[in-house]
Amino acid sequence: MAVLCGIDRIGEYERVLRGKRLGLVTGGSGVNRRFVSSIEALKEKYALTALLAPEHGIRGEKQGGVDIEGSVDVHSGLPVYSLFEDAIDTGASDPAARVYMPPEEALNRVDAIAVDIQDVGCRYYTYPSTLYYVMKACRAAQKECVILDRPNPIGGTIQGNTHREENLSFIGIARVPIRHGMTMGELGRLYQGQYGLDCELSVVPVGGWNRDMYYDETGLPRICPSPNLPNMDAMLLYSGTCMLAGTNVSDARGTTRPFEMVGAPYIEPFALKEALDHLHLPGLAFSVTYFIPSFFKYAGQVCAGVQIHVLDKRAVDPVALGVRLIDTVRRLWPEDFAFREPQKGGRYHIDIETGTDEIRLGEKTPEAILSGWAKEAEAFSSVRDRYGLYE
Image (cartoon, rainbow, N blue to C red; front, side, top):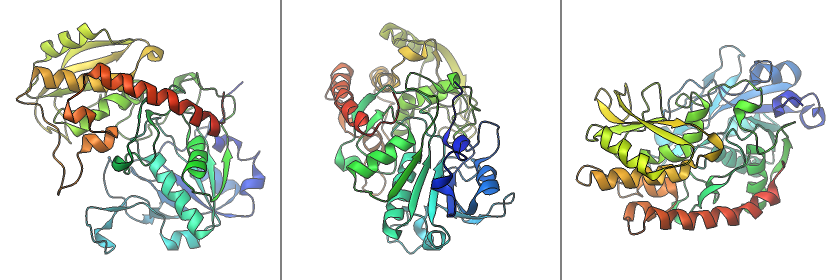
């Protein structure tokens, strides 16, 4: 049976979409099985009146963290409203804040907001947070939310801790594990049930998919969900190697192998490879590498480290990899390794990303941290089952 995303099934769900002015949250990954953009697919069949752009933009062209401005989409001619806007122009008291809610002008143009964007199955990816704020806006404005669901590309495995309340942020808006094992449609149901976002919600489910399937086994077009996740290995490793964003180690953004390589100018790569080899991490192998990022951390500098090779994707625990990487570099180069300092007296990035201060404080061994996190992941499985749509 062919796997069909929600956008492929809009003809089956006319009752949900017909007769409504629709807004659409999407990005470059929003395409149907025939490689047609979701914008064009919806516009051809229904009354699409507005586009809402999350991080990376409506066509997926922007780098992470880059301000998204309102505009007009050249191809469709539709107005584009930002869901990732610098608040300095909005009169906000904190100019470092961002605005994630659809503006009133956009809400006035629509009766329902459809969400069709490819998540990567990791808590600190921002698209689930965008969904959260869209649902919040829909509840306040009495609009409907329709999630055109897509597979979780790294399957239904649950790994990692559930966020501590004090560390919730846009890179972790809900208390779900780092690798949460849910789809966007299921997360929407969880937000509705656990967080009181009781807007009128419909989910157009994925057809023919089960939790044991990884994206490269679905036969669906694979479009990068964001510029630094170019392939399946990067998406799988992201739940671990992105933890290095909170440190002075590069996760290789700015190269052709983001999240598949890690390194820094101070690292001796053969020593790092040897230490990681001794850990015998399931499904993984390491090779020595050197790279020069063209942007982001250490732009223009030679970084030495390792490339991470996925040998058996089902055996890989990317969360454990991230914890082990940080511990290993910290032990081998204690005078050089550092966590990113908080900005303006705020929270440490590593804490809000991992949801806890356990890694930064270093008072527990990696084994103790991961053992505790495994219990939290196991406990979450019953929550996932409550809101699940797939076997």
